[in-house]
Length: 415
Image (cartoon, rainbow, N blue to C red; front, side, top):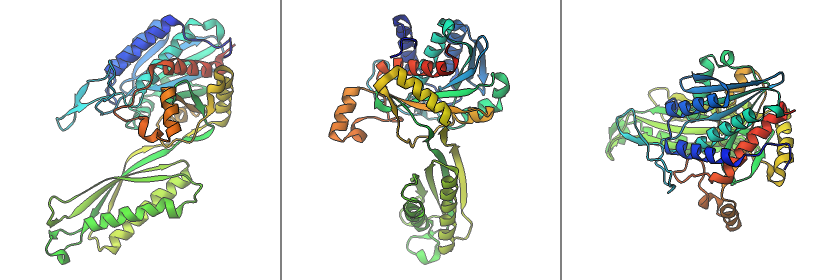
C-alpha cells in the first residue's frame, strides 16, 4: 500500500459504520429518498461542501473547491428495492411503503446502495480533512432512482449540467458478489444495456370446446417464446454476448376460455449498439411474423417499458484508476469480468460530454467465498444483488470502498 494514499482513521470508520447501519435500517424507494438525501446533505455541509439539494427531486450535489486543478465527480446511487429483507442482521430493514394499489410493500437495500452512499461520504470527508494533499474541485453526486432507470435523467432534466461544475472525469463503483477487499476495473464495455419490453398479442376469444372459432393468443405467445430462444443461439456469433429472458406471460381467466389477448414481458441484455439493435429488431420481426402466421386480427403492440444504456468505460481513465489501485491495493486489485447488470450512471457523464470509469468492489466474506468456489457452488451459496439475503460484509467492504473512491479521485487531484 502506498504511504501517500489516505487511510480511514478509526474515528471516521466508526462513524461511517453507524451511518451505514442507519441507512440500511431506513431504505427508501426511487425518487422517495427524502430522509437519505437529507442525511447526505447534512453530512456534506458539515464537511465544508457547498450543497445543492433536491436536484431531480431528491438528488444531492456537494462541491468542495480547493484551488486550481482538475474537477472530479464521484457518484453514488441512493435508492432501495421493494424486497422483504431476509438477512437476519441486527440492523435489518422492517420498512414498508404503500404501493399504488394500496397494498403494503416491503423495502430493503438489496443492491448495496446504502454502502455506495456511505463510501462516498467517507471519501468526501477524507478529502475535506486532507486538503494539503490535493488541488482542484471535488464533486460528490448522490443520485436517486437508479433501479427504475430514471434518476440520472431526472437530475439532468432538472439542470444538472448548470448546477454542478463540469467535471473532467466521473467516477463510480458498485458492490458485487466478490470477496471483500477485492477491487476490479475493466476498460471498455463493463455493464450491459438493458431493455424491457411488454408485448401484447391479439387473438379472438371463444369457448374452450370450440377452438375452431378462436384465434388462440396463448398458443401464439407460446410459439413466440420458443422462437425467441433462437435470437441469441442462432442469430449472433458465439463470441457476442447477449441475453434474452422472458420473465412473464399473462393470458386468460379460466381453463375452458380462450382469451382475446396475451401479454409477454421480457428483458434484453447487450453490450454494444449494433447487437442491441439486431436483437430488438429480431424480436419485433419474430412477434409480427408469428402473429401473421396465426391469423391475428390486430397488429401486436410492442412497448419498451425501461431502458438502460450500456456502461462502457473510457480506456484512458480506467487505465489511470487501475494503475492507482495497483499501487494502493496490490494483489487485491484485479481486472473484473464483464457483468450482465445494468446502470443509468453513464447518462451523467454523457450529459457533460466527459469520460468516466466505473468499477466493482467485493462484499462477500472471503472465507465463505473461497469455500463456495472450492465446492463449485458460488451461484447457490453466495447471495447476489437484489436477493432478499444480500448483505455486504460491513468490513472490510466499507473501508475498501472509501479508499477506492479516494485513491481514484487523487489520481487526478493529488499533489
